[in-house]
Length: 282
Length: 230
Image (cartoon, rainbow over all chains, first blue to last red; front, side, top):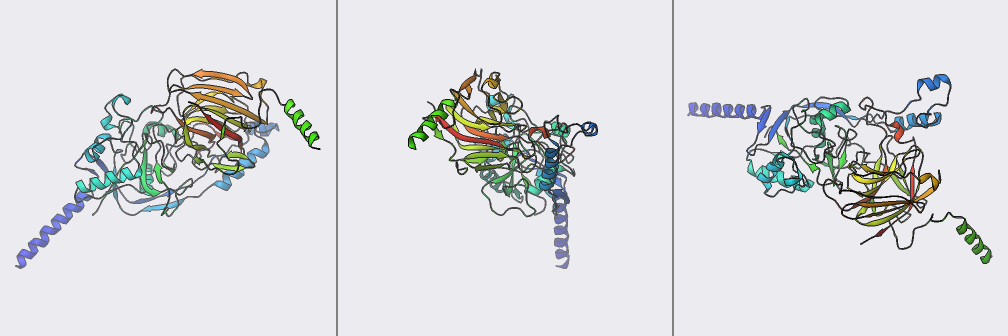
């Protein structure tokens, strides 16, 4: 009897370690082919706002000429720019991501959406795209639609917990360790911006943690309510009228396809999609 | 006394340049009640910014950047397809702005540029590749610098046909070869823009955008009205 109990305990611990090991795999692919990357805990500073402001050109100042001629700004206006930029600056706040989580390596595609939901609401399919729309991100989905997809996916995949990322998780994953906002040259390498349709997922360079299209292609819904401010608050809003969108879309540009942009619904519809988080431990 | 006032009014009316107006034309419906921003909302997905300072002030809509360097777009709640839009604008120098036509929620639109000195009255696209643009080359003949100027814009058709009159004088008449909207929209919102002029952080931009909006600058709009056409 004792032996039997020991065996059971041993079997259980093997099973448990296997589960833990499995949960900590750096990648995971689910039954409908959605690929995920494990994101480890860490921290970053979010919501810092330090807008650059124009300064009078050195040569005009040295020459004693009317500074600001090239922009039409007077000396007083240069001073005002500095004052406004400093007055409006925000130091940001530290976000601690305490638990590991898996996040979609790609935005949810039209093919994946159809496997779970049946019908495909996307505008950019068929003759609206130059290639196979199956691997384009699903769009024209509301926040509620995205939640419905996730509920159905949770029903299909027993033992897994899927959900939308929080805004903190989304930005942490998008930054992939970057402490400052993304330079324009890097945006162009990693983000689908300035195109006439959505694009197949995964065509641009991934970020440092192997995630594709965090910026550009389609805006991505996150769990949080919108606070009607330029950036998120240290404590996410508990109520709101609309939900937060991150990452900008193919209609975006280097101004808003950055880690920081804190936007909100409804948006255009046809450039709004999402990616999914899977809990790392059950 | 009454007669004297009447005579004064007659004299003032006669002094106005022909074709210019300083009130909503007959048959147009106000888009702005002069008191608050009922019927308007701010785009939350514009690359210009999502938190502009838009307010109703002394019968005007005043649009400013907020916070520093972040612009935005004020959009009509209602969408229009074929219409004539009347609006008077006081264009502040070195504040890049525009009147958006058939705008999407993120501000993808045909745009009448407002930029002094510069291309005020030009037909451009905002996040939209416009097939056929236009410039208001004759504008300075009727333009009143640092003052109110009226814009009357007519837009019709599945394939946009757009006409601009400034202070009653036609500047251009353009029929696009195609509808440039990528998702095929044939209607959209009216939008008023404040351009962005600074990124969220230094050292990310490849060029200086600070000339797009004069520090503390504002664009002012009044007598905004629309006539829907069949």
